[in-house]
Length: 509
Image: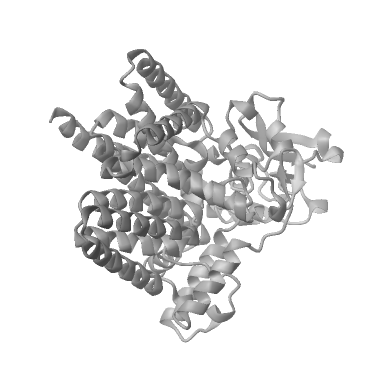
């Protein structure tokens, strides 16, 4: 009973503290490469709904669901932010708040599975302190909303299987509809739910009851998916099929740096996702998650009856949701790029495995102390990284990479592929150059975009244009992982994270 009371207290306090930190910091994050296009997709869908515009029919990204983007545009149209800076800051705040809300649901899920407040607290911290994912929670309006809704869906999935009431399955259907809308990969959740509902119905000799719940859930999911995706309105079946085909082999063909070589997204090796996850996740988190996975596999082999236990089955779901998507993209040779961001949603199941491992190790006092010590040190070290590298957490690499020679990451992997660091680079120049008008050249589009993230007074002092006339040149090294040899002697300042140059500033004059 005491643990239940602690659970209630710590759940809310962790959420409140996280929200306060987000409110203090969200305005300092730069804008990312895809945000203007994502916002434009939301606007095109908004105009299709509320005006007579038919631009959606020819829009290049019409196959993107807009369950997250459309509400952002509705909020924008309602409150009328006065500048691009305010628009993107608003988007960052809402995206981050959704992530924190999902972290709270993750806390509740872990407590539901183990009835132990300490495990729920650790789960919340592992979820929110992953540096790359935390950074993305502000400016990635594709992959982080999917991760967030996926996590909330996992909670209602556990609740529905524990208490098979109609209301639970209707709520589950709502979130599954939103999930599939944001990314079609979400279709795996209803497939697995249907499979186990049939099994449960056969075992309980209540097949009609289980089929009726499954049908109601499916109808709700399809209804929500249809209502939140205007591109389906004209021809639901044909347009959904087209979206599936497009997303399975996505339209991105620029070469990217991986393991020291430039590779095309259509030709990535099977090691791509395991490598990226392995080098950008804190090592203690990796150790604990893999340990939990091994222990779960051992229990499944020795005691297959866990398939029949609804509470234990959620750990099995976690194992499936972590492993199967990775195996599927390897088998299907799916197009992936920009690290493992399209697969961030496998991280919450991975943490469920980590907590499962902690719970199993408590039966062995020595290993229990070791595991708690390792994870405590890991969380504290990671929090230190957050503080020291605030606003650039998304460029984190663990000791596997950061212990290598300086700039090993930049020369072998994509680092700030979003271009978010340009904001901090521009601000550094403004703080260290007293000239009223400063001419700057940038290597890629986010350099121009992040000028709009500055205050009006700052923006008035900057002119971004041609390299030949510039006082400074900024690069995040995307599409140019090698040194700028002819500019080497002109290096002025570098933003560095994980023993790596994230952004280089050259002073040309």
